[in-house]
Image (cartoon, rainbow, N blue to C red):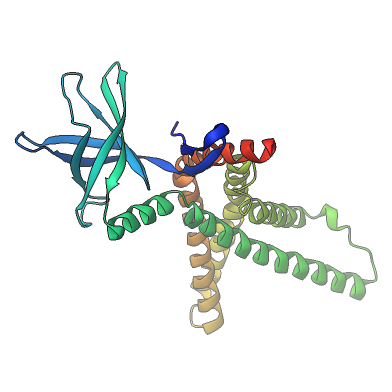
Length: 279
């Protein structure tokens, strides 16, 4: 698991902590008077990087390296200073510090790391879906209660709401939607990974309910497709169902990355917590 990079002050106190992320970026080591070496950067931070070499290969203590952050981005050229060489079964792991880097390139690297370390997109997608499910379930429960209050008023007889299976389904829809919405914003909690996964899973009952409703609305649309309200309501609810399903796919597909990012951020903030606890 990637760990934070840190500079130390006297007395063992942490001065600065630099977030580094796992990557697999092709790079080229530029050597004077020798053939260039092709390597893969395996970790990247705003102050340095690391890569692997074969046991038989060597690099000087100071050298140039160029790479791209994405396939079509500009080539970044930096001068590196070797800070560590660690032997591993597969070869040699070389850790380097940026000795010379343009401000423009350093900004690109910083933005790349920040985008990687931010799980905001899947969180926002899931949170929006859960919010709309909460609204949909809320008005349906309210409408159901008003409807049966009207029946009770007209017939002057009590209606046991708990006897209605549909009402129980609505309550389940309402509860799962609100739980999904609340938990989707708790990623910074120490149990953030579990809460986010719970949020995504809580959308399953909502998606089932929406799908069943879309089937019923589809039958209504076939019979009354000439009516504007039926057309608008049906297609809006179809889009609502597609978005809910998409949010679950995004959430599940992003869970591995969120798990990794939260692990990195946890290690990144641990040295700071230790210093705060000592002081």
